[in-house]
Image (cartoon, rainbow over all chains, first blue to last red):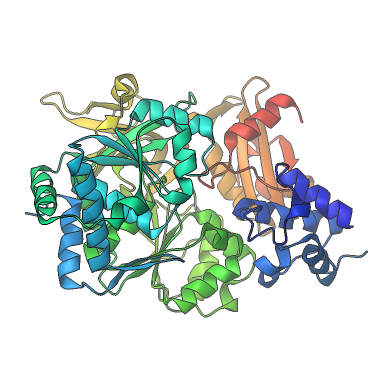
Length: 77
Length: 505
């Protein structure tokens, strides 16, 4: 699943080296449309609904935090 | 006589010197500080003997970008805004047309400014030096020479040919607009605005100039917050924001995520929106949450200084009804002309044309495009009177409200019927499963394509649309998208969607 999420990030912004970043949001890797797109991609792929209250910077900081968001939102490993 | 915008700033600095004018995540500038910095910037430009010259401001969206604009204005020059995230090729095209005498940048963006091989100065270095008394006198002298038909700014909009068009706006136009706003929405020094529009997008003209006109406070918040709608609402709550002028996309996102009742935003009293069509369903969710607030749909192209019509929601609007763009703003005259250049009757569609003090002087360095859009009023054969043809198709309903139907180029002929694509979109938007939608016509094959984001099957959506519009308006081909491509202004990127149709994907 980590790889799948990484692939989505690469699809959104191929120009960034995500492995180099400790916080995608703080490093400016994901702009507002990227977040919207990423949320729809995750919802589609894992057949989940991400709660609006969970769309906060902390949950999009790294592949790990995104993964834990997906699992909390009802995604299966 | 109040005739230039910097008089707004001077007056507010006199009345409310310690009141906050512009706030961002790094600085909070009082009116005294705003005036002080604007004067320093102006004195630098005056010292370079620049007057009535183009200045490109290449800074991140921030409080100090605003003082840069005001400093340019005070010196008798005019500015355009170069977005620091714009692709280099677009910046080059703009610089070619605008041919700035100087680029005003900040230390963070100076490396980028250097790339364009033009004369540039760095904001931080300019404000380090306090101007001498005679330099301040020179600023006042330059300022006294400005008249209201002098240019304040040039904003570049995307042209259909790919060459950006620079819309020229004068001091007079901005004052005309700002005075109307203050009166219509009771804006005053207690008004606290939260800015959404990028500064190269003319919705920001409301944010900046109504702030200095009324001694209000403007919060220039990090663009990042717009990714996280709940944080936006928390910002509104924590900073007691009472006025917003945002694009419908942002308002819809908040409503769609069911966040409206998750945060105490009762401080909001003015919710204004413009820039694209506001779907009634999401608007109704906002109204339900803030029943006492004023909701207003504003409409206008950049060429008429932000807005020329407005509709303050004063009745129930059904979810499948278009939100009117309403009535002409004070001191703007709207004429809806049919193909024979006659005024339309009720329910007859025509092109919205407008005249008034808020009219642009035309496109910068582009007489051909100017002549095509800014034309003699066809209803006036007696004297010289220029109107602007917006290219937008509208009609009057029985209530005499203007309803936006779509762009002239989005009015299409399909199976022999004349159709406004916007009317189909309005129908689609009223479905609760739909987050985003865009309808396009493929002329070659005469097919209607519907692009949509939402949890609904093509067939169900087709049936739903058919309950609202005639059979011939039901789209033929459905493209369910994970996401809608967006352009720089945060609007749906129709050019990209047309590419999908032609590419056959």
